[in-house]
Image (cartoon, helix red, strand yellow):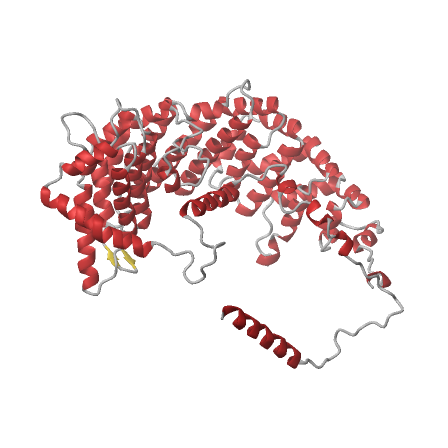
Length: 604
């Protein structure tokens, strides 16, 4: 038995601490120093919390190690020092957060010229972040006294660790009144405006990307915390600035000012997409759009839309004349003019704007024939499924959004003097039919099926479904009737034959051979089970999640009396597990043969 052997071992750290001349480096060489620290080894903690030890630990995480050291061991001690300082031990936290000279040493790291060593930057950010969470008042008070703190952090924003530091200031400060003070301080420091200015063509792309990601994370964090706070709590000043028309207009000016670069367009559009995000209670993407009962729990601020609307023509121009890109070799051949990330993000933005159903924005998109341009790109880049998905979302938004009768459907009805763009100006039905016939000809000649056919099938099904029922049923029916006679005949034949056969082939039979009543589920049962499973996947890990997970103790109570615990007797002869044993296969073969015969008899 385990308790027969004395497995207790004395840590070598205690033996080292018995020496009067022991050094910090000697202790850090021990493999279990972190374990002993987190286990609250009192002697070790008292040693580490000495002034000279704390100073050496801080210097290790803020000073570049000598370049002549071996690379794999060069950052060994800085890494261990960071882990010790952030081990969440109160004695170390109190010493580090309460000693202003140590905080000054940490702060001095930011005063270096860029670029910072990325590893040291991560050690610094982790240490300061831990202090913000554990010694909040002392550290916040120290940082607020430093007039240039925000400027220094933004100077080094090309290091992702600085982005993490800013987010900790926003999300890790408690209690709520102190957090509000920090948010007001960051707002007074013009944090949002200064981050927005970094998304400029003349800035380094890494700085642009990190600034954009920081703004996106601030938006999501602020909205999350706003939903969790009580109604009488003061509004988040950073979120208010981000959602203001002035701020969004400033971002768009930065994106389109001077020579337009793909990095600036993409990073700026990512911030706009985050501002246009709405919280969904179910699955993302098409599942939301196909649901007639879909409702947003967060409404897009109208000031965001008002700021974007005047610049829709600039985004339209990007679809026509994107930033130049070199030809690239793909698995299907040489692509002379790649789609590019800029145009893909424009497609994402248009899809997000259409989902808002804002009348003025949708009408402007119709005037600019933006949907027509996106459909051109959909068929031109037949292998870019990222683009196909966004165009499909656009079509779904136009067809599936229910609006009051007095309000025109975006993309279906526009101004009276204009023809409805999606079915007439954009010729959606004709394009679906032509593309399908072209694909059939390619496949008949031995070519590969086009990459956009799956999305084209779903778009055709969307039109058919909305002809049968939906918020725009009558309007689509009238538009189909207005099609030229030959086109209408082709469409009806396509729906009745080609599309029906395609849908039949695409349908997966859940049960094909076993006709068990318990497995033959109706469509309604399958849909209900799928939705229940989806809800399970996206449920939040609440405080009582663990208590509700698994089985209840009562489910096993009735079987408790059948459970027998056999006690081990030391007098019993212990079995040698390594002893070679003869394996008898005959018994196993007989039992399997008998099992097969039983199964055969049941099937007859």
